[in-house]
Every structure is written in C-alpha cells, then in structure tokens.
Image (cartoon, rainbow, N blue to C red; front, side, top):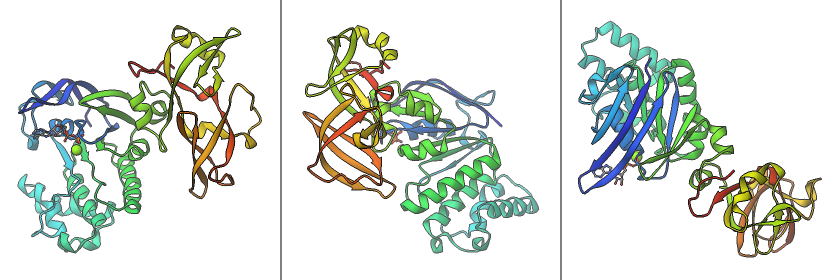
Length: 367
Ligand SMILES: Nc1ncnc2c1ncn2[C@@H]1O[C@H](COP(=O)(O)OP(=O)(O)O)[C@@H](O)[C@H]1O
Ligand SMILES: [Mg+2]
C-alpha cells in the first residue's frame, strides 16, 4: 500500500481564486485520513489534485515513491468515490462495477471474481442484475464504493460520499466504511464537512480553512488540544463556548474576569497566562465542562457562575441548557435527569481544569 504526500501544494483557479494555499501533508500508508472543513475551504480541490483531476499550480504530490504530477488519473492506481455516486444509468450494477476492469482488459473470470467478492462485502449481491435507478440512495452508494474496491487501488479517495443520504443511513454507512477500512487496510483519504463523521472515522484528521490546513492530529488530540479558536469551535457538538474577558491578578493568583463573574485559573495554567495579565483573552469551555452546581462536589466561589436558563433542549440521555450571564451566552450539556426550566436562575460550576484560552487578536491557543 502507499503513502501520499503533498509538498507545498497551491492551486489557483482562473480569476485568481486561491483554493489551496501552500499546504504540506503526509499521509501514512494504510492510514485513514479525513480532510474536514467548512464548504469552500479547498477540500475537494485537494482530493482532486491527489486523484489527478486537477493539477496543482505549484508544488509536488507523491503517491508511494512516485511523483505523480503530470500522470493522468487512470495511471495513478487510485479510486475515487463521489457524493453523487456517478453510476452509469444504462448499465446494471454488475456492469457498473465491472466497467473499469473491462477497460483495463482484465479476464472475464477475474472480473467476475472481483465483482462478486466486492458485492459480497457490501451486501449487494442480490442487486447485481438491477439498474441503479431501482436502488435506494444507500444501495447506490454501495455500488459506487464497490466500483472502487474491485480496482484494488493503492489509495481510496472519498469526496463527501455520505452527504446525499438521510441521517440514519449516513450513520449506518459510516460504520460500514469503517469496517471496510479495517478489512481492506488500504490508505484512505476522506473528505467531509461533517465534524462528527471526521471524529468517528479518521485515524487522523486534517482541519482546513480558507485553503490552509490549521491542524492535523488524531481525533482526541484535536478535541482536547485545538491549536486555535477555529478548530476549537469546529470540532465538537454542541460547539465550545467562547467568552471574551480579561486576565487579572488577585492575591497572587490569576483569574478570568468576564465582567459579571470571576473564575480562578488552575496553578498549571498560571505560567502560560502570566504574559496576558490585564489583557483581553477568549476563554473557551466545552458544554460538558459546565455543570449544574446541584450535582458537583467541588463548587466554590472561584468556579461558580450565576446564569439564567433561556432554552432547555431535552435529548433523552442528556439535556442541553442554553444559558446567559451578563453579555455572555453559553451551552451546558448536563445529564438527562436535570430538571432545569426556562427563566430559572441557576448556579453553574465551570470545570477550570478543562478551560481553554485563546489570544483574542491572533485566535491562537494559549493553553
Ligand atoms: N474549477 C474551479 N474554478 C474556479 N474556482 C473553483 C473551481 N473549483 C473550486 N473552486 C473554488 O475553490 C474554492 C475551494 O473549492 P472546493 O475545493 O470545492 O471546496 P470544498 O470542497 O472544501 O467545499 C472555492 O472558493 C471554490 O469556489
Ligand atoms: Mg467539496
């Protein structure tokens, strides 16, 4: 199997649109790398350059040991699965899956063997003689994946393959692709705008924004140690709470002053935040780190904040509370047993050991 590497790759489209801005990224052999970011950030362009459907304006791309710039897609030994399936409507499922192998003049018996094996893996054997139009969206997507599998490529490229499916089917196909990865052990590069898909599928995730890669890390590192406010807000649902305020010193300790509340920083955070004393910072705290005082043992005046509950969203196992305090709004993710109601005044405890701080100007993580 093959590693993929992009070195200083830039793509400028006509009209001076810089879709990808000098990115460098190494993807290990047999790795499942997810490229995630909002619409228009350059994910598809990056994937299409790996596939050879677009050539970079500058930079180099390697698949295995081979520099592939100038090599046409069909000779790159990759297979790509698109959002819109791109199946041939006049062909049966079997013929769709066999097509690329026929073009490459594989023997009839080898084609039959590979198509049947792939159909078995994807549970579409009973559909082999049907046309795509009689299949459901999920079944069509399986055929599109099957068409990629039969080629036995050294790299699989997926461009938002699940976006056209309804929510339930999307979750099902997500686990199927995960299983497929475990089974095939092939390098996979998977593009999505959906951070949940990214977190649940990738061995590593590259977060893109405006043609740049902001951070590449495994899902938990990305969640716990985002390098900037964008990554912090993009990964996680409901998203991280952000509150602007000032770092102040009191009795030799540092506090975050949010105007109507003050919370104490942990001793471990003091060193890194010392230089920001009397300066504005953005305090970030994930919804699961905001607790109802009734249910915690470590409440003190240094970590407790008075809030008003504005919206209650019961999710079953948990409840999302939309809260306000002074100029700030925040979300708390509390247990399903929580009985808070709208307009209730509440005491919330911030787990300061989980606090994030960002430089308000550069938006880079301080801690
Ligand atoms: N063929 C093209 N010609 C001109 N601009 C393009 C072309 N393809 C993409 N773009 C632009 O490049 C940027 C990145 O697009 P794309 O890679 O498709 O983003 P994503 O897949 O992350 O949504 C967008 O601003 C898009 O409009
Ligand atoms: Mg795209």
